[in-house]
Image (cartoon, rainbow, N blue to C red; front, side, top):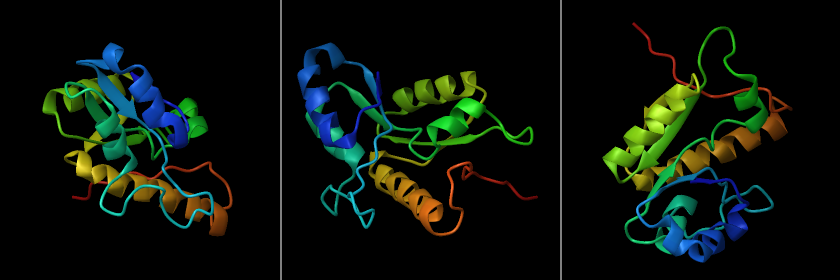
Length: 150
């Protein structure tokens, strides 16, 4: 299930559909950013994805993904013949492998960043992109990615 809801209501949605989410993969692309864009609305030792995982059934697997690619950039596809990069984080290796296969099926490059605690880093990347949009790039027609050297 792709959780494409505002973060403020995401945990409530997960709790509401709890039984239907048993054994499922929940792809979290939310942004738990404060309205003033100065930080997050989750505890300092957590992430939006971790808070969503707390609301999910024990056998559901939350994978953070797609939160670092603006939706219209994702819809536009690769730039300069280079696939867009999608960073993922999650605790279950099989769930991450399935999400990675889905990402690849869209012509994108998945990058596994580690376990679900890394979702906080991915959420910081989202905040970084908002800072770039507001202070230097001045638009959202960009993406961040990996360039492998040598």
